[in-house]
Amino acid sequence: MFTQVELEQKIKSFPYWYHKIDLPFGITTPGWAPLNKDMYRIPSDLSGKRVLDIGSWDGFWSFEALKRGAREVVAIDDFSDYLGKLENKDRSAWDTFDLCRSALGYSPDKCKRHELTVYDLKEEELGIFDIVFFFGTLYHLRYPLLALDKISAICKESIFVESAILDDFSPYRGGFNKGYPGSQMVMELYPDKQYGNNETNWWAPTVLCLMGLLHTAGFKNVKGWKLMDNPTSLAYCRGFACGTK
Ligand SMILES: C[S@@+](CC[C@H](N)C(=O)[O-])C[C@H]1O[C@@H](n2cnc3c(N)ncnc32)[C@H](O)[C@@H]1O
Image 1 (cartoon, protein in one colour):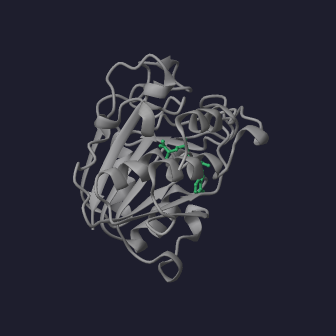
Image 2 (tube, rainbow, N blue to C red):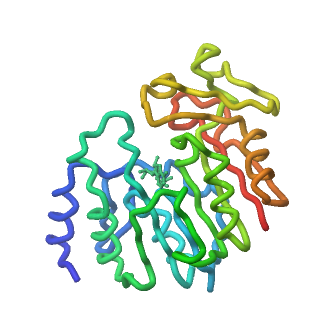
């Protein structure tokens, strides 16, 4: 366990934090995500659930699942997202995750982590999950449907997906409030850095299209919503979908 001073020093030793994570001593890591966790509408009680957190970065959602009673969490990340601007040396791989896991007192058995791409998810290796969190990652993938098929094969209860969406913003249509309003079935491709000046952003769907992607991967009772109306920055042009098996 850390003293307050040790924990503060360790947090400061990392040049970049993506997540703001509440730790002991009233300390919060100096990231900016998530902007509003309540908009994700994740069940407050995850008691007994086995949860997979895909693209976990510093681990906010892994720890959130455990705080909500999850029996076990498995976090995976392949560290391919650098926000289009971070230096490799500033992307601290699992070090920030490990620091928070340790500060929060979760054992590596209860809170596992694997360096793995979503495409390599296999029941033989990681088993089956009740709940899958797939936040902020779909639009970074060249093959989003393949990823959803892989997830569907190891998910037995519910999937929750958060993504960049096009309803209120399209780089091809003139920016903010010039997207595809009113439930249009659209997905845009970004061969270069068209979306957010980040070459790791490949696709963005409308909310309706995001729901369609989940449907084709075998999820039922699919629901979707925008995280915010009339967004004025890209960070707020986000949507959510969930479905059950
Ligand atoms: C924008 S961050 C989202 C972090 C977190 N899930 C959240 O929503 O707050 C995207 C994360 O997905 C990871 N990622 C990107 N492609 C991936 C892949 N193919 N498999 C696993 N993780 C991936 C990135 O390295 C990064 O940590």
